[in-house]
Length: 130
Length: 123
Image (cartoon, rainbow over all chains, first blue to last red; front, side, top):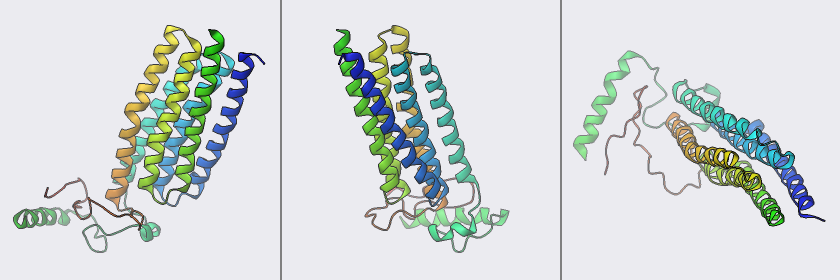
């Protein structure tokens, strides 16, 4: 068994392990109870994909795959940032209320222009107390 | 010399794949989003970084080494930023930490006026 065979064997084992990792992450994406869980799992899926591409590049010798890995990393980062903005901006879904807590306010008042004046009063009261 | 590099590359590939699998198991097994985020952003980054390092070691060409290093640096820079953005958004929207969480330093600090995040006091 030459060292080349050893490298090919290691690549095959690593590809198998990475496929198992893909499946495990996919389970989290499917069952993930909330949207941020799924977004996190998608981010991890992209990172695993980068590693997978690197192993394939080692195994086949086509180092051009590395450029694809870089582009995939860029797209994955931008997707995660966009999803984070989306989670921040969207309204709360009523069916997810079991997983949510009231941070400060009671019963999720609708976000109208009237509620803009209230927090400043609250902040001033907090600042005076401390 | 080439044989040593082959063996080293194979070992690094195995270690990187195992780290990635450990991160995947962490994502599946940890109880809430905040601990899952740790598994994804630490072990996952290390796993992918090791696989990219193995590629750089195996190629031995300057262009490939530089690009692999750049990809690893990019991964190292963006993974914590993405994880922090996501977890902060989730916390702000109101996703509960696991009930076994001991300390929640941000409890009650975020004021919700609908648009922007604000910490009212540093005590």
